[in-house]
Length: 143
Image 1: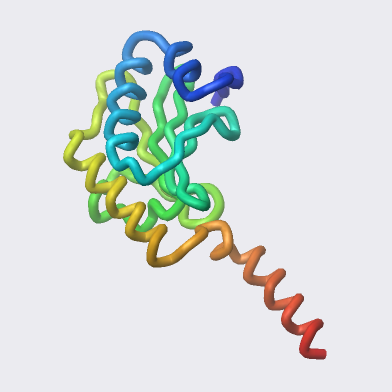
Image 2: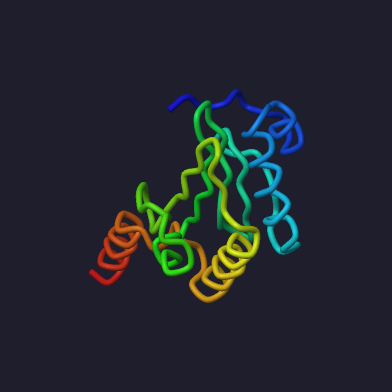
């Protein structure tokens, strides 16, 4: 899995792509940006969309484009191809050349991800490591 070189801006990230990857990222980006509720930046070498905390990502690699959601495991009823992996409740849709996702389904995913973000807050705080650290601090304060 080869990462792309860091881009100075989201536009530069997309402009560095070619062929089907350019088309797929452009389509996904248009759906995500239509929500108007997400901030877009290049972070960790790919496009990250966030409110006060990360919600979803788009990452182009040599052979695939990934659409990932920090709480994607809760979105598998909308898109069964989302594969769990990584920290938190991350799940990612892998798109290779010739593969796509209908725009209406991508919009549903973005909307549902935002609803989860609003109701549950920062997904990074739900990780077992963070919970264990909080419990340890609380125990020390109570002792």
